[in-house]
Length: 313
Length: 307
Image (tube, rainbow over all chains, first blue to last red; front, side, top):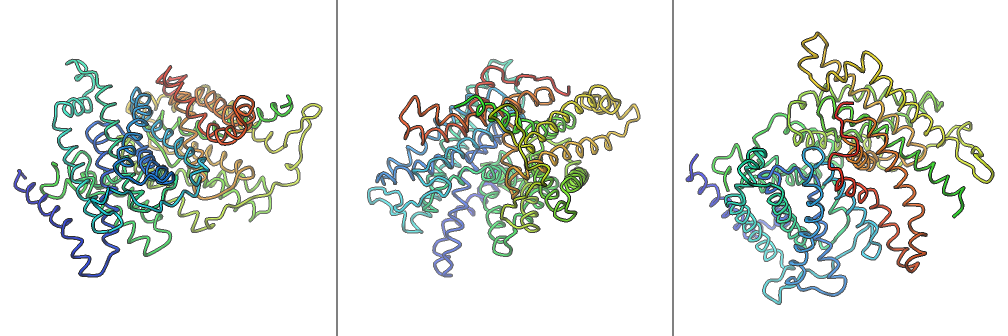
C-alpha cells in the first residue's frame, strides 16, 4: 500500500471536502453543509481522543468533558458580552487544558479499568456542575446569541465561511497529531503503550509523557467544543453527557484506532448513520445499539484498515 | 439541626448505600471473575425496576411483582450473556466498553418503546406505607427500613455463598485460573452464565427496590451506574468487602452532603453564596472523595482481586 495510495487518498479527501459548499449550493441542499460541518467538528474531538486512546493506550471515557468546557467558555464569555473569538477560543483551549491537567494528574496514576471508570466519573461530576449552574441556564442550557467574532476577518454567521474555518482547523489538528506521534515525544508515548516495563527499563517514565498528551488532547477537544457551541448557537450540560463520550470513543474505534484518517471516517459514518436512522424512526437508538455491538464483534480493523492509503496520516 | 434529623439522614445514607452495594457486588463479581467491564449493568437495574412495576400492576400484588421482576432480571441477564457478551471475554476492555455501551442504547430505547419516556411512579401496599418510631421524635419510613434489612441480609448471604459453599469455591477458582478449572471438569461457560445472571439479579433487586423511592424511567440505570463506579474505585475492584465499605461510605457522604452542606456553608459564607455553591458542591462531593482516595491509594481501599 505504499505512499502513493496515501497521497491519492488524502488529495481526494481534501478536494472532496473543499468542493462540498459549491456542490451543496448548486443542489440547494444546505442541510448537508450543516451535517458535514458537524462531522468535522466531531472529527476534531475524535482526533484529539485518538492521540491518547489510539497512540497512548489511555482509554478515556470522559472526553466529552472538554467539549463542554470549550462550549461553556464561549457561552459564558458571550453571556458577559465578550464576543471576540481571539479571546474566546484560546480561553476555551486553556480552560480545557487546565481541567485535563487536574483530571489527568489523578487518573493517569491508575490504569486499565480504573482509568476508564475514573475518567467517566470526573466527567459526570462536571456534567452535574453544569446542571447546577443556574445562572447559565442550568439543566436547560442557554442560547448563544452572537457567534465568535474575529475582527471582521471571517464571519462565522456565513455558513460557507464557517465551514471552511472548521475544515482548515480539522486538517491542522490532523497534521499536529501526525507530527506529534512521529516525534520523539510520540515514540515514547507509543512505546509506553506497547510495553510499559520495557520503556521504563530504557529510562523513560511514561507518566509525564502521558499527562502531556492528555493535556494536549484536552485542549484540542476544547477547541472542538468552542466550534460546536458556535455551530449549535446553544450550550447545555448535554455537551458533557456520558453518552457523548461514548460516541466520540466509538468514532475513533469505528474509523480505525491509531490511524490518521480514522477519526474523520468514524465521525462521518456514525453521524450520517445517526441522522439517517433518526429521520426514519424516533427509536433509532434501538437500532444503533445492536449495530455498535456487531461492529465491535465483527469489524475489528476499522474503516481506515479497509480503505487503501487511509491507515497513515 | 436536631439529632433526630441527622440520624434520619444517616439512615437514608445507609439505605442508598445498600442499594449501591447490590449493584457494586454484581459488577465487581463479574469483573473479578470474567474480567468483563459491563457498562450495561445499569440497564439490568432498569429492567428489574420496569419488570417489577409491570408485574405488580398485572398481579396486583407487590411481593409477587417483586419476585417476578427479580426472576425477569435474572433471565434477561443470562440471555444477554449468552447472546452478546460471551464472545467478549477474551477481548480488551475497550471492546467490552463499546459493546456494552451499545447494549445501554438498546435497552434504554427498548423500555421507551414499551413503556414510554415518561417516568412511572408506583405506590406501595398499605403494609409498607407507614412509619416506625425509632425513639421519641424520630420516625422512619417502613419501606426504607425494609430496603436496609434486605440489603444487609443479601450482603451476609453473599459472603456465605462465596466463602463457604462449593459453588463459591468454583467461582473463586474460576477467577484465579479459568483454564485449570475447566481442565478439572467444571463447565466454565455455564458457571460464567450463572454468575452473570446472579449479578443481573442483584442489580434487578436494587432496581425494583428503587422503584417506589425514585422515578422509574429510561436512563435511570446510568445515573446510579456511575456512582457505583465511584464505589468500586474507592473499594477496590474485585473485592466484595471493598464494595460494601465503599457503598456505605459513598451512600452516607452523598446523602449527608445533599442534606446538610447548604446550611453548613450558609453559617460560614453568605447565605446567597451558599445557596449557589451548596448544591453544586454536594453533587460533586463523592467524586472529590474518590480523587482523594485515589491520591492516597491508587488501587482502592481493599484491592484484593477475586476475594
